[in-house]
Length: 492
Image (cartoon, rainbow, N blue to C red; front, top):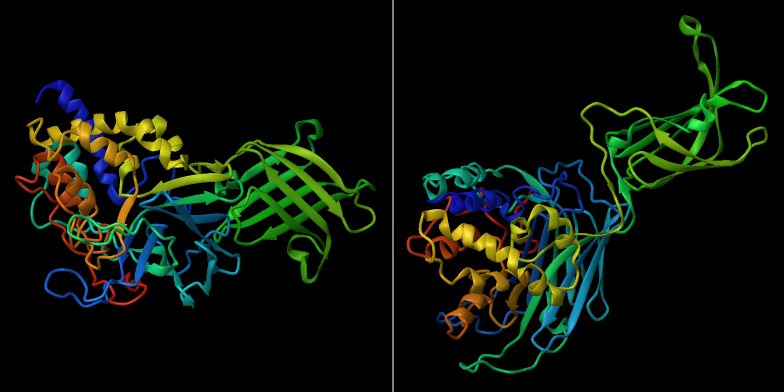
């Protein structure tokens, strides 16, 4: 393999480690706004008859997204992130469903012609044509991440049986929605060459920060350089608890310490009740029974980035005046990076892993791009370069199932296609491969089933044209998926 091909392989095949959200390639840590995986499939409860699908069309589309890899029973959904599920039918009619989680950890999904449903985290909510579950689940992703990492440097020889499921035993937070077919806007009503009714939805999911956020890396000492001698110590502690101490002097010249604490927030705009304490004794003479506190007002912090913030104090007692000022951070916690994020769309997922093939300097803009009409024109060229690199993984160029120039625009339109009239969902590329051959598309809803081994199909399609097949030898989840809603397996 010449140096050019080897460089392409190293630059783009390393992204395979990141397939389906195995890790994030955007340079930031996993947060509730980073979507790991997205699944779309028909409720599999109908009866298969004669290999031609259900005796009656399936009635419900199931959609699932996951966030927070390695979640625990203590991991909470963020109330500052909204999750949007988008749809477009075969006549271009668009619709969407918006899911938000309250501070009290209740999920509410609304949209799509007036649908609305709510449920406490961990419970199933049902309302008419829609139902929802949000909570801790087994991580449905099954891949050998170590083999994929080696694949980036040694190519297809990295895959050896047996593979190891790198995410066996781990959990995620998941939102699962079921929507009855009759709730979707009507399509064309056309039929294909086999007389099969066409009822296709293109679907993708995006996350949006509803307000600017900041993380524990903001912890440290803060002050206003023009008022040296007073300042704040800020700590962001376990449980997303924001704690501050103010030190200064009151109008009588007496030393003053104030304290405030609020739980479960990652908001960059934080209002906190302020407490003033009094007590008796010093050191060994301190009497804890003498301690008293009173609320003296509210202090609001508005962070504009990791080093600057505005502070407003609204007093509720005499002797302490209200004020507004700015502050700057002067110390930080070692090895604790601060991450400030503006409001807006953060991430989007259709097929697994597409964004990992976008150059890193463009990836944030790619993830924030909410206009599917622009995607093919904007990202096809970058994805074609990536497909050329992957095609050479076996040392042979030009033997992918279709040329990189044909695959790249399909990859750029990063939405799952789901046919609501078929119950069996056999593969993400079901529609696309039929169109490329071309041949009629039959007995396959497309979409992405929970148990579908996407990696085998993608590697084989792009490296060898399916001859031979390439896989990481991890072909099933570590625990069985459920046969009823919410389908994702119970958490470990």
